[in-house]
Image 1 (cartoon, rainbow, N blue to C red):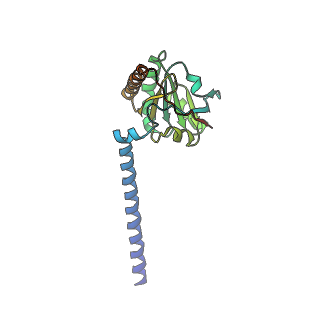
Image 2 (cartoon, rainbow, N blue to C red):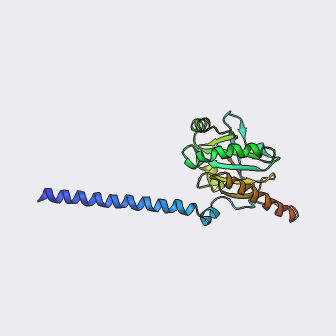
Image 3 (tube, rainbow, N blue to C red):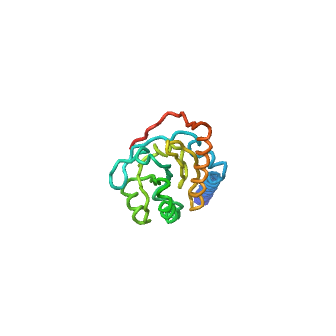
Length: 203
């Protein structure tokens, strides 16, 4: 009888653990779905009109990179990572898009990961835009970028004018168009800019 009881006990715990795993996966999937909705995306990322936090990173050549590096033109700042599958799908569109717009705006791909992993990712995927890596969550938290690929359109004065998911060419076009229109409206209101304090995030 004790053997039957032990087997029943083990089976019961196996069922409980399986149900727990299923519930966890479902809740996680619901979270991912929510983050992909308009409401979720609207809550992700710093608010439009906020001054973009500065950062001090290094590109793949070891050269310093910051917001000031890209001043003079608007900047499309894209958060991604080597483990992000949608990021890999974006790169061919991003390469073409950035080349076509090279006289209109800068593009920087910020990769969440170690420099070696980022360098390998950029090489394997044929990434042709400037790339910088950040190993911890500090920069992503500063921008409130929880999902990838997520992009910010930052005007020449360093103010965020558009934000959103950047899964394809259409998303990139929409971000630039929306950011340009928002900036034009802001300039029409006597050139008002955000008065948020500038933050700096270093490696």
